[in-house]
Length: 297
View (tube, one colour):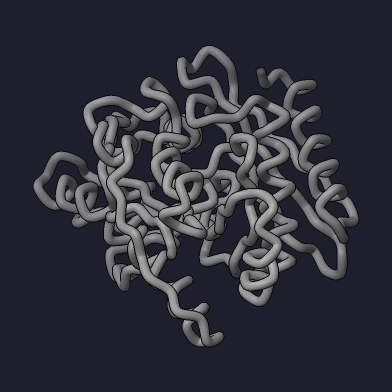
């Protein structure tokens, strides 16, 4: 049994895992749930408990035995899981980049001065301000369909969303421009799916192993290590993105900004050989120390 949120994107993700497991000969059902993160839409996540609000109810279903696994967008998974839970598997990653969606403007540069751009991600806020300080950045909550509806109703000139979600739901045509990481660095784990289980379930580890992507697991482990070392949560305007440079060489870029605009945007990168999770974590921790040395806090 797979525990999943009931938004269209979350159901797509759970059904994707369900299909992969069914092809391997397993019988798999879904347990749809509405989480606190889905219910609280009038305040930013950073003010009501963070992205962990999207996973707590799913973890309770695992704890009570109503479900065996939970499928999450990895960027929504807290850096440290509660005792008794484990991240069993990271699947092959979709496009990790951010995308600009707008009915009238083809790029960020094409937006008129003072245009209203919607996002509730502090990371996106500080990176957008670095690119276009003249923009009016307004909060935007809700699932992907709700955000697109608010845009189409004219509440915003443009919104910024994860490219992965749009592509997974067949909405790639809504993307007007994709931000390269050099312009807007993605969040740790963005575009990746993670599967959570109860600790000690060796049977599930073996069952899920064929679904895992080792390169993406190592890359996202490095990214999450940056965030963990910085005390990362959605209340921190932090970005981290790792890319393979060939062989075992992994480059990680990280950025930190001040949401109040009192400090300049800090960007760093680190490079190292990574062949196992401990090396990925060490690389991410090194990038975090570079951020702190450059003024991030």
